[in-house]
Amino acid sequence: MKPKLVINGAAGRMGKRILAIAVESGNFEIVGAIEHSSCAFLGEDAGEIAGVGKINVELTTQRPASADVMIDFTLAPAADATIEYCTSNKIALVMGTTGLSDAQLEKIDQASKKIPLIQATNMSVGMNVLFEIVGKVAEKLGQEYDIEIIEQHHRFKKDSPSGSALTLAQRVADGAKKDYPDCLKHGREGKDALREKSEIGMHAVRAGDIVGIHEVIYSTLGETITIKHDAHTRDNFVRGALRAALWLTGKTPARYQMKDVLGL
Image 1 (tube, rainbow, N blue to C red):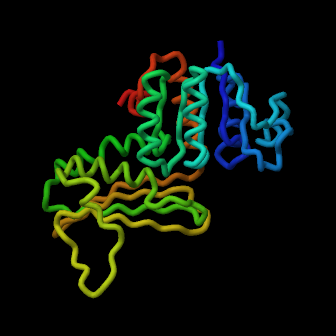
Image 2: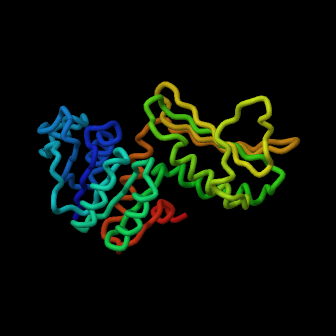
Image 3: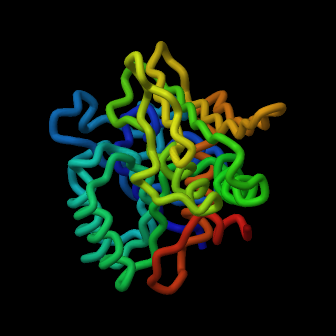
């Protein structure tokens, strides 16, 4: 039996692609397409909005009481309602929304005692492989290598640095035995901005329609190593989220990670 999937933010840029690729995959039964009350498309068929034809699921503000898993790529202020809905109805949750507060992350921890869930700053398969290796590279290279992280996103992105860049920084700091987040240096300016040995540089670019580029630079006197991930399209995040939703369905309550999904 196919998992029953609810998509939160189904008329958004990510939501439409999640719905479209879920339908095209044939792996899910779409039972809910949720949007904010201000959405101009409420009452319309969610499949037609997503460009895959009629699926007989109406875009609505009402969340179904029965489902197997929800995917949420919306905004941080909406996360609390999503967590409460999934917890109350015993629905597995794949949370890809970034910019969450410490209080919201604590709510996710508490929810994981009642439902299976995955909360990740980036659902891309390639990016999650990157998460697993950047700390190991920092550890092997040692303290003589300066480490800088550069992330690039579209002009509409609200949070900075990106959640993915912060995850990279935390993994690198762990590997390099630096004190996270105190080791982060967000940009540099001034006449006396000499780099300190203990810091990890963090730089954010916001321009045009860049989907997402993350680069970790390890450099010392004589050589530089650069590890880079370039997202060509949001579909790679979508495919990772759908892979996570399929894997998560039926699991026992816990807070899982994308590395569990990918067997890393």
